[in-house]
Length: 354
Image (cartoon, rainbow, N blue to C red; front, top):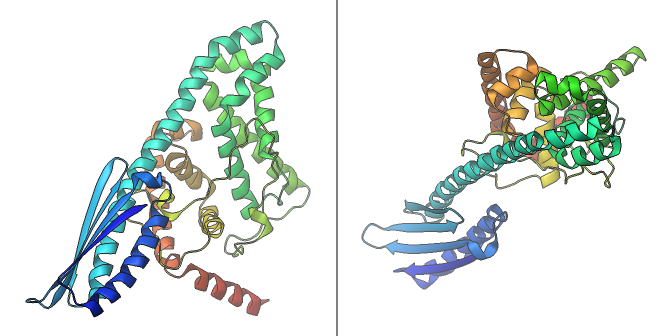
């Protein structure tokens, strides 16, 4: 990130203090804008002392791809002026990132749907000619989005204890769905939607494995139990050579509260800890509601698509998504400020109970 600082009408002592605030500010916005090409990010900082008003003025202008954001702070204390300007600019940046993220997720899902539709005629030819391997080779590269959904679903069930850690490999789940699609292709196409059918099939496969474990006496953990953020239940059995494999997604609060209101706390967890924390909170939501929320917010499925997958009316889906959003918002408000301290307190309380 490039930046430029202008100091106006401030004493040498004030300038030295301002430079310390500027250094922290630059470091913070370098972190918040790390998803952008650093050559395309420019921060302009103006620090001004207003002698007549005995106040300090801080003006921030941040240029990032597709936006120029600005904020100002004014206060009798320099630190407070910097804080005002920083918090306002962070909210503007969060709002912009939210818009870009929502657009990206929507486009990714639309691309998946279009690619699946485009492949149907060729898949039909392969099936008719009984070219099983060519059918599989043609379909597999299109299913990374399905793999992402399967991976996340398995992880949720590991966090609820319904699946033991590393019991199911998402590659095996998607592969079974692909083989099923080949064997039942004509029937699936007659019903109209291959992507929809594959999505439902991976859920059925995961549910079948959960039910099998129940029959064998496996017991899930109570939803109230707190899973430590470094627990083995966050680990998945994965084949990194899989044709579906994609890098693990690291969730942030702004991914699940995509309305520009979330600002990264000063004392943050590591990326992995934060992602685990959010997954843990989502795992506590009833399955049908959680699926509706996650598919809409993280996977870009529309309300009608989710209603069709779940066999429900659209208004019920819409209500559930908003209900989960409110729950996650309340958890963010409770956990985001000092997540490490809260985590340590929770684990300490659990240790006492044991």
